[in-house]
Length: 334
Image 1 (cartoon, rainbow, N blue to C red):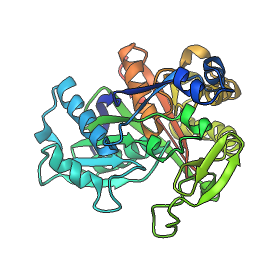
Image 2 (image 1 turned 180 degrees about the vertical axis):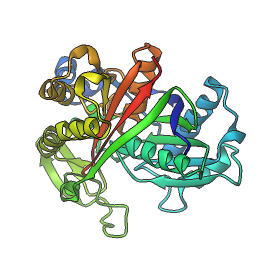
Image 3 (image 1 turned 135 degrees about the horizontal axis):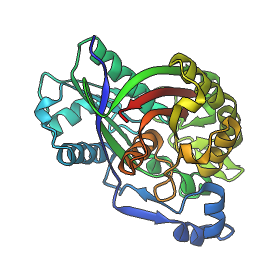
Image 4 (image 1 turned 180 degrees about the horizontal axis):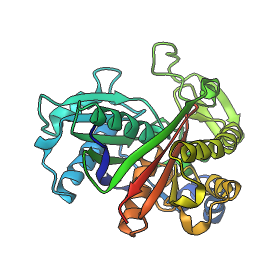
């Protein structure tokens, strides 16, 4: 049976930068220092009005091909993870196949997942390769949450940024994809939601919560119940980490590096201390790009690889909207 490996990763940001100084001018009671203190973020990248998640996806894939000398003709499957698709239908992955010039014999589909999306994409890719359905999978994450955040929602605007990543998953590579743990609790669905857009709700921007703590939103905008999301995260992520360790028959000290979904600095610091992970074994990369949803893990993983920090076992953990969570152990050659 073939094994599945991460072979290469690239990522891309939009060109527009939203700095804390701009946000502090709009929200006068939030200074640059206060925003950074609360989030650990100094700036984030925002897609232009005429720039969409698929556009970032194409740029990320093209960068992957160029940066790692990959032939588009070698790709036999494309998986696209987004919660901001171009259309309700058709599947954006089909559009990406044509825009990237991939073979007509290339399988393609979307997955609608947020902060756990990268882990789920790796799991699906591993299954396709081990079943000999595909040999070279282009897995893209791309999100433009900024298009769904109300202009007066200072809480979410300080946290989220736009980005896309592209990962080649193949039968050989730099890191073997080992065993997973995945989980779901749909009872928390309403705590991180955009109500409009599907067939159930077509309110057209009806006001839902004029003020919800530091959040302002309508039914067409992103709503996040921060306290409930934090409660879920603090409860489930330690359990997730332990289950990933158990599923791979290793202990905490066998893991050389931990890379979690980059939600915000407060949550990351809390989780690191609660799980008792040494600072030197816990990688963060959020300060200059913000929470890019399904792209946070591949972006951080790319940067950790560039810094030569990925040697031996690396544990990835994603968690958030759904509620959905997932973790996996990667093994890099030492």
